[in-house]
Every structure is written in structure tokens, then in C-alpha cells.
Image 1 (cartoon, helix red, strand yellow):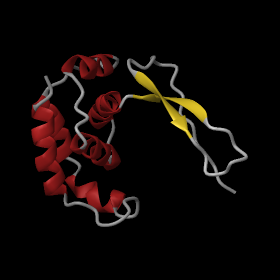
Image 2 (cartoon, rainbow, N blue to C red; image 1 turned 60 degrees about the vertical axis):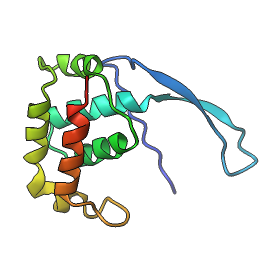
Image 3 (spheres, one colour; image 1 turned 90 degrees about the vertical axis):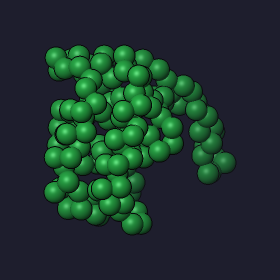
Length: 134
């Protein structure tokens, strides 16, 4: 039996979303529209997660998103962080990323399909992406 987990937050409303048409593999199931967060907003959420919890998967997710050109703007990141009384500081984000190096292989080794990128590669890529947030 398969399961689908849906996370619903009543804490805040999405700033940006789009509709995606889902076309199931089975013809018996009609296609339907699904409202999804814009990838830039997901990236802003991941920065908030990096600053407020200790999960290396947030770093991997942010890296994955930024490699595909999904860079949030500073205002959006600040709005996400405001619930925690914080503002975006690129050096603080990089520092929080660096603190997770020891957890990288242990926490992500079994989650990532294929070869897990080295932490140093991820850090270098994220330094560039995070410094480009305007």
C-alpha cells in the first residue's frame, strides 16, 4: 500500500504559486490541476529551515533548487525569517551550512539516489548562490 503525505501550514499563506496539470499514468484517473509553490519560494523556505533547524537535507534541497536557477529575492527570505525575529545575512547562512558538515554523509547517505555530492562541492556552489541573493 502506498502513502502520500501532505504538509499543510496554517502559519502563513504562500506568496507565490502556480497551477500544474497532473496527468496520471492510468487513464481511469482524470487529469487535474494542482496548486504548487513557486521554486523560488521553496528556496526561501529552505533558507529559513537552514537557519532554524539542523537538517542537512535542507542544504541539499537548497543546493538542488539553486543549481536550477531558483534564487529567492532578499525580501522574500526576510519575510520567511521574520517569524523568528531574524533577517537574511549571507554570512550567517553560510556559517549554518558549514556547521552541518559532520552530519552530511550520515544523514543523507541513504536518502539520495545515486552518488551523494561532496559537502565541499555543495558549500562552494551555495556560497555563490547565496551571495547572489539581492
